[in-house]
Image 1 (cartoon, rainbow, N blue to C red):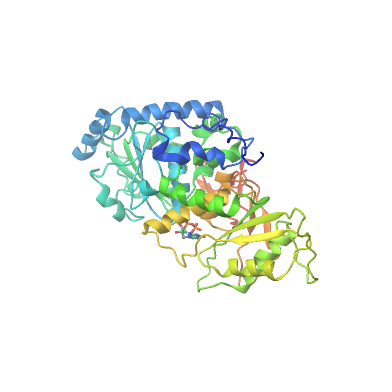
Image 2 (cartoon, rainbow, N blue to C red; image 1 turned 60 degrees about the vertical axis):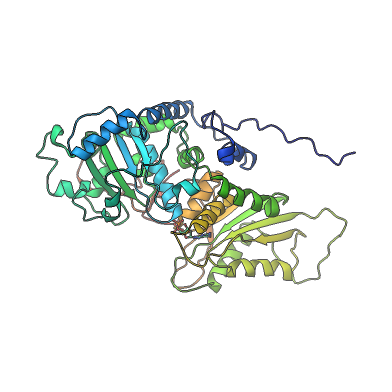
Length: 478
Ligand code: GDP
């Protein structure tokens, strides 16, 4: 009979158009080659230049990565405090801030490594290996536990004498020849960084940093848009990303593969609640106001946006007319939020009243963790799973300022509707707007003209770097 569906089609392109390297063991990281079964196939293909640079990077990482001869030599220099030129240079990404911020900053650090021929090593923090598979074949991106300055990572901050900004202030670099350069420099690119730290984004300063074998980077930002404004990187970035609004989309899918435990959270939830719906709508609610919530003005805003933008149907007070034998269309709404108030209210609206279209609206929320608990494993696994689930929806509504939402939209290749940030506890009007691109917003960009040494609006210099929809001083690629 017809009871058995045809066997699932063998995925055409589990390497995502050559973005992913072949040859990984599939069982140790199921998501790597299964993601294609869940994500929509997008017309946005990685460029052949990006693909070849990634393969070259993988070879470099294998040659210079942890426990290689080159790594040990570079480490000796670091320990001895000497500067002997070595064939491998590194950027160490320090685990810092919430998960969405970390995913965006890690992708930024990787792109920086790619542009500067450095090897990216990742401070595992408390949970990186619990959340992400290794992205590079036959090596590891994790910084070994005996790295000599790991115990200083916590103390690195804006005041740190090892920071590039403070070294400039005390003129240690200006007076020394390259051979006297320190073996490492701390790059403070956290939102509280100052004008000197921000010189990182100047071509002249990049030329100086080239001479430093170890860069230790702490950041909570997606700083990619400002890399596009550094003249020496411009051509290479254009070759890598002819479609400039796809940077995180491609790098995110290349780098971030959920571990099997997280993949279980994603796939079980997907099949139980989302897979069979005719359409999947994601709504990501992140409220930065203090106070417990849920807030009425936020609920009003959600309903206003989703109905005006035709994402969810209007309701009617009339008696429902449903044809029990008809083919009922269903929309699955995946909501994410730290609390459950908004989800319960939206679900109730569509239970208590019929829709004018006759569609059935099923509303789900995987967790309500109440507050941010960055140190807990299951908490972060769920946060990662929820970002990923949102990326699997057809249409997405996100909250202003939230990196959690940025990760979901870019991974999914979705231009979200962004809920404006409420002011004075009132729902903004209009409630939301469509984003210009799927790219994340850089929240703390520099506003400096490196050549003329004056302030400048970096959001109006080139057509592809613009101010963000949700943060007027932010920058994003479009
Ligand atoms: P941002 O603060 O919105 O930019 O996003 P981050 O991910 O950097 O930090 C927020 C953190 O709060 C997340 O990493 C989670 O730990 C937690 N969080 C915020 N919203 C949610 C949510 O909807 N679901 C879950 N599971 N956790 C959330």
